[in-house]
Image 1 (spheres, rainbow, N blue to C red):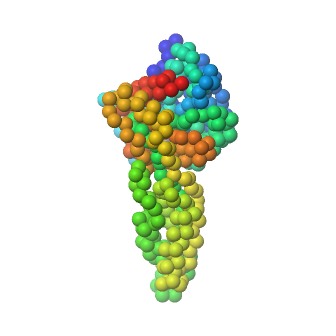
Image 2 (image 1 turned 120 degrees about the vertical axis):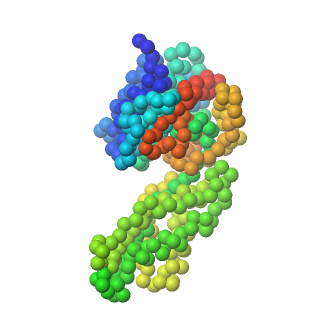
Length: 380
Ligand SMILES: [Zn+2]
């Protein structure tokens, strides 16, 4: 039987649609499990819920060295409302690009890691430490899979975690954290013809939002991650055109840099809002945290980072300067939860993630497979 190439495997995974919500990652995990087992890899499926499981694949080493963990998520975001030039789950290849939801984020990355692990296992080479593939559920929504994975007993004996999210095959050792906030404003209803009798919650919310400037927040510019950002992603309020709205709310996406905490940001937002309330005593509000993940940084001076860099520089004959990512990944759970360094490198342009016509250059899939093969063989 012909072993599927990394390209075949990426296509198979993309065609197995796993938009989250609801996730339904089990069929994709099954594809990965079958593929790894054929190559002699020990596979465990870890059930989370109906239709959802994490996967652990392990190539056993002699135990002289600590394990390397390769990690990727099986879920994708929905295709969205815009029309695609190629079917969203078709994995069609045109002019060297594979199109489809998840080609870049991150079934291409998952396939390149699976192919590397399978290749090493099938070769029968004796490793000095375990090589592990961890496939997760739920990264796009709540990281439920990464959270479950924290219970794995192999973490203390792990050297480092690699995640193949799209970086255009660049080396990423830091990512910003996030705090998602809800700002709710209460006003007073009145007839639209007599607005002076009400207190307009929408107008007060607008003024409050105008005063939140991300750069006014206490922070130190990070060499790899820059400054924090703030985006108002959703606003709700009002019931009818001829009524003064008595309630409105905004959802705010604040990206943290190292040194900042969710509590600190909330406190600073409160200070801004309190200043506004002193000018406008009718302004009544509530700020609540919907969810938060801390920033992740890996020390670029670690030997494993040097190794990760050398392998890529040798393969691709270009400088591989450790950089930062603006987005967050499973590392937001795995790095603080395990205390292990996380390095992100994968095929595809990060700007393609969550976009219509998402695609990945096919040659990057092969390059990533080669990279992850060498990385493990030379370290272990
Ligand atoms: Zn992703």
